[in-house]
Each structure stands twice: as C-alpha cells, then as structure tokens.
Image (cartoon, rainbow over all chains, first blue to last red):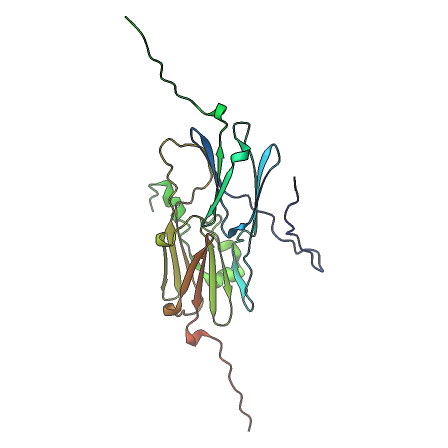
Length: 131
Length: 139
C-alpha cells in the first residue's frame, strides 16, 4: 500500500515555512443491519482529489483541497482552513471489503461498508407447535 | 444570559468580531468556532471563505448590513430509523458567524457561491473606501 502522506511540506530559505499537517476529519460511524455508513466532513475536497485505500487492516482516506489565494489578495484573517485531510479506520472483520462504496456530496464523504452475509443479523421466526 | 440548551453554547461563537482588532491579535478569534473561515483582501474588496460541509444553499443565509457580514445556516444530521450511531463527531447542526469589516461595503454587489462544502463570499468595498490614486500636479 502506498503509505506516503501527500507532500505538503515546503521549505523556505529560513527553513521554518512548513505547511499544516493533514486534518483528521470529523467522522460519524452508523451501523445498520446490513452495513456501516461512515461519514466524514471534508469540505473543499472534490471526488477526484480523494484517495481511498484498504491495506488489509485499515481503511485509509486522504484528500486535498484546492484553495489557493487569488493573485493580488492577501489573507487578513486565518482560521486555518484544511488544505488536506487524512484518516484511517479499523473496520474489523465484519465488512465485505470488495463491496465498499464511496460517495461525495457538498464536501461530505460517505463510505458504505456492507457487512459479510455471515455478519448480518438474521431474524428468524420460529413457529411454536403445541397442543 | 441563561444557557438553557447545549446549543446555546454554540451560539456564543456568534462573535461580532472586531475586524481591525483581529488583524493584530488573532487570539480574539473564537477558540473553537463551529465553522472555520478565512478572509482575503485586495484593493477592491474582500473574499470570505468558510468550511460548510453538508450545508445546502437553501439552508444558508448570507446577509450584509452596513459593515457587517452575517452567515447563518444549518444542516440535517438526523439518522434514519433503524440506524445505530457508533461514533458521532460531526456535531455542527447550525452555525452563525458575523464579521465586521473596517470599511464600508457595497452590499448590492455581494456575491456568494457554495461548492464542495466551501462557501465563498465576494464583498466589494464601497467606492469611497477604495484606495484612490491622487494625481500630483506640477507647475
């Protein structure tokens, strides 16, 4: 697996200008009978700029934004918008990795992780016989 | 002020930021704003960018009153029936931020767009607030 963190480090003459580290996005994990939905806030990331990989153990999500300062502008207030995101999830052994699906909408990434058939809760109704 | 609901704490971030003061003392920014933003400036105006993941344009209000820009919005985080939350870190359901600018604004020409969860608001300065080049006459 490619473990390289996106190259976000830049050097300057003084050696002090270092780009911020990737932000760990706020994440929801929701379980259903047949799947897990994992939702991550990654504002500024487009579907093309996402990298999702499974390394046999963890699911890695990485993404980059394209926020650049237009020519002639200077930043007068900075609350450090994320320039890149990185997160990894231990998805255990319930998930059928071959069927993971990803969907981007309004800067929110939703991963659908179907459970293995054997991990799905089955409800079986048992008929009770009696006299 | 009574805080009757946890959401009220979030509203404490409804900071009417003294913009000029912020230039020199970033510590006046809220410690952990619900919504992070940045402001860019050139001679003609400002560009405000805010991270608003999952917020739809219809649930967003952008307003300019005098020299203050108000941003307000919400997003739907309700879970469908049968869902069991295992981890919930996405807590921002609604937000409100106000920014006071150090110059007068041209409210009629404000433009806003929402793309990939980033709100971009272009806020032109009022004509009288733009820098003017004064021609120096020589005799």
